[in-house]
Amino acid sequence: MNNTPNLKMPNIEAAQAQKHVTHNEALRLLDALVQLSVNDRDLTTAPLSPGDGACYIVAASATGTWAGKDQQIAAWQDNAWSYYVPQEGWLAWVADEDKLLAWDGTVWSEVSSGGGGGGGSTVLNPADGGLVGINATATTTNRLSVSSPATLFNHEGNGHQQKINKNTPGDTASQLYQSGFSGRAEIGLTGDDDFHFKVSPDGTSWYEAINIDRNSGMSSLMLPAVQVAKSTTQSIANATITTLTWDIENFDTDAIHDTVTNNSRLTARRAGKYVIFMNVIFSSNNTGGRQLLIRKNGATQLWSNFFANTLGGQDQLLTATIADLAANDYVEGQVWHSAGTPIDVTTFSIMTMYKAGV
Image (cartoon, rainbow, N blue to C red):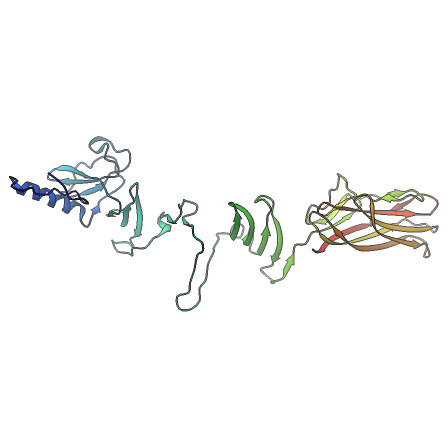
């Protein structure tokens, strides 16, 4: 006896005796599989009192009568269980869940959502646990996964909005741009409700370039900048060029300074043009002149100002310059005086550096 190729229904052979048996067997198969509806898909053991014609998808790791029939259709027909191996593309309605499933050759997957009462539309609905992969494999994290040269979101007559919603202000609603699945840029609401633009060289260290305040709309460019100060006075010997140290940071947006290690240095973490200010206050002394110097990499003098002590008393002096620095170049502030005796640089002295351009 041979069978049909798809549903495997038995054919009636030529000159076959008791043709009605074969015919009825085919009808029983059609009765089970055409407009397939199953009562349940979660049972691992056969129900004790199934109704005539009742169908089930046998759950994984089935035991007892259903042992070895995982994922097959079990139909109670003529007081016995009949089993049908699903073929790729079969659809089955699950009555106790009001959901439509499809067999992809390996698993039964949800492809529709009933709206209650057996109604509803046949649409993909990840909110019910569905996964959608378009030329890609979806996961429980990336429930919609697309692998394609481009993705188009088009209008339907008027405008179109792409919406990304988060739960609380401390959560993230953003677009992450990756290279080799490692983050390189991110825009959106990252950790609060302001709008952020961030970049990363490696997916681990992140630098914020722009922050737009949600309340005022004001934007702040996150340019590298630092301002340092002193917690104690520093004694400066007569006629000796002395490098100033800084153990306080008023602000530092790019790890430009360290308050302990090499704390005289302000280090450019990225190449560009930097504006450098130094405001120095000497303790009171009416003798000699004063000099401020800005030096690069411990050797190159970038700027120098000499001030004659014409006012007397405490001297507050300011110098500034613009320097073209490579990544990891550092600058230091230095002072000199000819007071004839040591004098102090006071705690009100500060040094500031910020990146002004490329």
